[in-house]
Image (cartoon, rainbow over all chains, first blue to last red):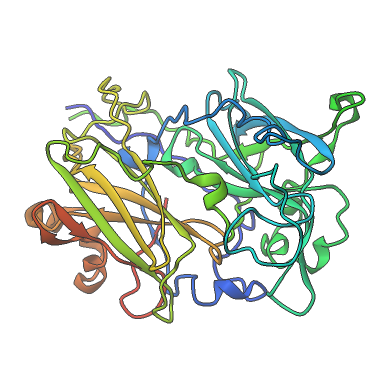
Length: 238
Length: 180
């Protein structure tokens, strides 16, 4: 019988991902598990995963054109490549984004801070990467906003990203930030990532060459998912 | 290259991560359909009304329609993926079929990701089935845990085709969470 034990995925280097309990970010206090996590060797369910191609609506790649009028704010193109940590492009994978509007307000019933809503901006988008792992969408630059974590706490402007890759283990939800934001130093979510170089990988880069002349600025955000162990698929026969 | 770090989904994930019928891995009323419901609670026992559950599983024959399954993709078109935001009572629902055994010594199971404000990374757990006593007893993960801890991973049958699987993020009866 051929072994059905597949090659797994490598864990990230220490310091790449935030610890679940991060005292500076108050909401982790009652939500982070207190028992040690149990290591599960990657097996069939973990090395496979949903290969979603939708649902993607006609304007999901352009968050500025989802309503009758134009969204208010600085138009930007956000683009990049999705690869794994071996440098291999991740093609045809679903990228989901959501964000606040230009004033820093989410179009969500529970966001009640008094910044204006924009009736022409919902803030959600979906695209698939192409055959080489590239994605691109058009949106407006989100605003910063205050939150109740500590006195005078402000979230740096950010766009939420959700990625699947091709395996359950590769699932990633992150946030993209903008260059040189003066709010980084006081943000416990950004700073929950222990490794300084890892934090920098969440910051997009301004790309003048990718701007659309007379229309939109452009920011590049490349995303790296986990790579595979180098063990062969069929490791044992019996 | 090094991975991009994880960050929390925040409280407004429903703007980007939900869609109609996301909780239907199979259509309601499909032959063999089971409805799995549960409530997500925090360390104080308060419900989590702003979370998201995602599920991934094999089909009823224990196969994946995925090229990285060394047994070959099933070709069945079975999606195997469900997602459901928690409601104001912290409740989620997934309608699916019970996965078959994979043939590798593991008991039938569904992999689960939990996302929420206050979770800087998803937490991962598994749903096992209460009618698989023999298979559960020899499952490599379940059998590595104390009976009390293992019990947090086994759904409870409440009626024909109805299961409950509550998630306790922290504290007494804390769900077993996994590093994958």
